[in-house]
Image (cartoon, rainbow, N blue to C red; front, side, top):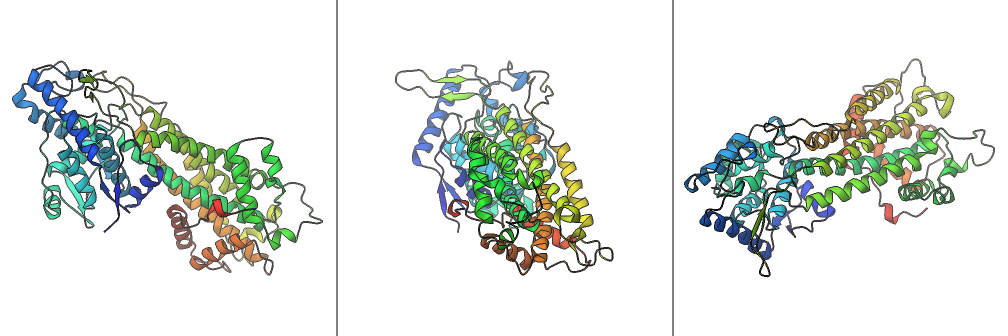
Length: 512
């Protein structure tokens, strides 16, 4: 059984979110969170008892907010809400994304501002802990008024309707819940809206993109350093003085990493004197400037997404009275996912640039006039084509990412009869990150193969200790390319290693 992670509502860390994403934990809540939820649910019940009209509690939704609903129909109102809003289409969300969104929904509701009973939230947590994944179609949210359609499909599964992934099989939700010993829920007033209003889907998709980008970034820095040695490039551009006088923090940190990776290379030592190259191409020389800027963008996106992961984003919000103040229910707009859309767009730029820079280094390495290596990195070029068309694949993927990097946040289409007249499109902005990451993982994987091939041509000279370890890791998966062979399986395995984060070092422990 996985270890238990106690969610502290409003105080989740990125490391905790990564563990949830990987499926390494079971969830628990502190008792204070249970008390806070039940206190906000009591506020909702008090409103119903008094007969006061309140949006989402005893009224219709969206453009129908002026329609008053009788008390004896409030449970039907919540059920109808879920059924009518379960209109997503497309493939189901990745299980890692589903885990994240369920955990973040639990944490958000547990802050006690949503008017939902703790028993309902416990059921969602039981579904997570049982390893069940609701069938949540990936398309159908515009990223405002919450991720209504996908979160409705999540809630539908709690009813025992729809489908649930259970032990590798898609089962009717009722059957899957029964196998796990989980009773289906029956919603009280406000609870359906609490479950489906919020940015948890777009945020989960964006965090999925962020965590994949972290893997891409680490692999690309390693590939870039290996390419420097493969092309007999200079480490002088990584001199700390160059970067300190510019002052960009990411650039300074990334230059340190390149220095640490290249320190002690016998290949570099072999051309310190009488090197006929005056300057390396930008794709080698400007890596700290480009990758450093990407590093800073990732940090910015991380801050935004961590804040959103801890946020309360449903509507209306319930504020139990304290210190003599009355209870209040306030309609706001925290469900508008514009911060997530901007963060996702920033990550799209980062992913595209990681791949774009890596593609340029692939082009450099196969070009004998620049790299000094055999044409297309293969013995007997001409008889063998080597990495010629692998570069074409890298170019195709880099070009595709340029189109996918177009910002989603600049688009908006009014919905709900113009009641919801500006939306963020955050869900698509975040969803496309995984496709872009897969593209870039293959580009970086192709570079790793090309750079490893270049290192082999310099034998018996060796690269640095950390890059030798990387080279050995690559060669465990893919042998030296001595003649033309089916290359697609090699590209596939190394691309998967990049996406999984298999190529990594402890950057904090490395000293140049």
